[in-house]
Amino acid sequence: MEPQESTIETGEDQESSLGQIKVNHTVVSTIVKMAAINVAGVIAVGGNFVDNFIAQISSKESDKGVRVSEDEAGNYEIEIRVMMEYGVELAKTAETLQMIVAKQVTNMTGKPVAGVDVIIEGVKMAGEKEIESEEEAE
Image 1 (spheres, rainbow, N blue to C red):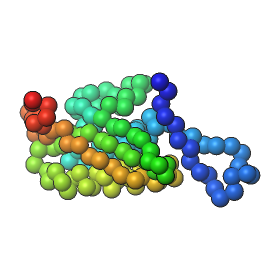
Image 2 (cartoon, helix red, strand yellow; image 1 turned 135 degrees about the vertical axis):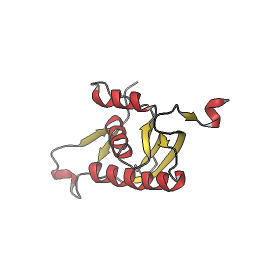
Image 3 (cartoon, rainbow, N blue to C red; image 1 turned 135 degrees about the horizontal axis):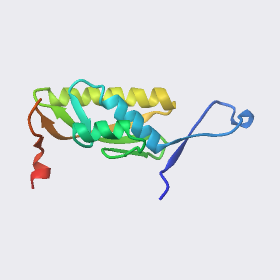
Image 4 (tube, one colour; image 1 turned 120 degrees about the vertical axis):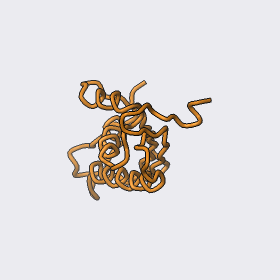
């Protein structure tokens, strides 16, 4: 199945436009991941640190940990799953993550973000194994 594409409006007068500009949701997913890993307290998106690092340097892009869709108005709806650093204030870090992701996606695509849902998959202390969420333990 082809990844869903979205169209970005490029101006008021579409008749004089040279054509449409389309941004694949995979590109939006990449923007989300790059914004997220730069937030203090976020260790990884959709996996452990090693998996996240390998995905960044490999030529294959993975959508693991990020889901991008659009609402009826065409605004992005984003879901992101993250690992956070042990000791950070989870709610505050998640709120910062929401704001930064929404701002970065809007700035780069020119399209508004309706919402950013953050799912904290677990926490990790430096040098120790991951402490998984209760859902994964069941």
